[in-house]
Length: 224
Image (cartoon, rainbow, N blue to C red; front, top):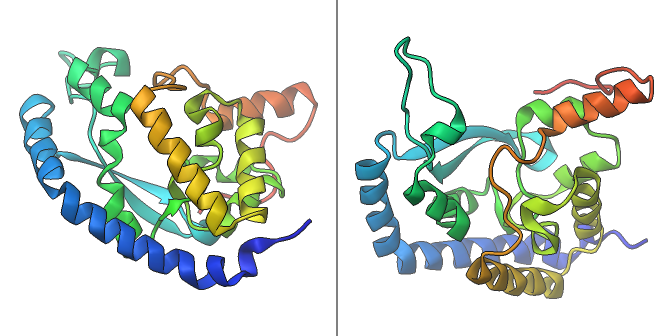
């Protein structure tokens, strides 16, 4: 099987395109981003941006930016209400249209992410990947990816990681173009979107798998 990570496109051209395209997108979409910033602040409150540490290339940790999609509503004791009680119609619209992910263009410009690549998942998942699944971290995580155009959030975990590995091992300019085009189509159609909380967290999913198989709860290695 051919590994394309050492190709000229993967090593040099892809990063240049990321800088050019993310910079151009930020300029063109700046009115939309500014409008969303104001609307999020009015409808959902501050902070406007949701910031979370995620593993990037080679599992190096970076801070990912998104527009917040839930309120900070709390109970009488000051504890955050369950997610389903903090969601709003506006927040769900942001998620459905993927507009909440526009701030990730800054991550792409900085070099934390790429326009195309495996989606950055949670740090707590790191100890639960198999050696083959860890291959997804050999490239920069993406705003969209091969797994997303084959089901977005609707794929089961093993299938998502299979797509991520196929992407890393067959990374080409043509493949990135196809993924970008399919992403645009899916966003416009609003297809293959699963509401937050429907999919089981990967760490819990893998713990159950390991328990059923009589294997250790956590694979070798630890989260950074």
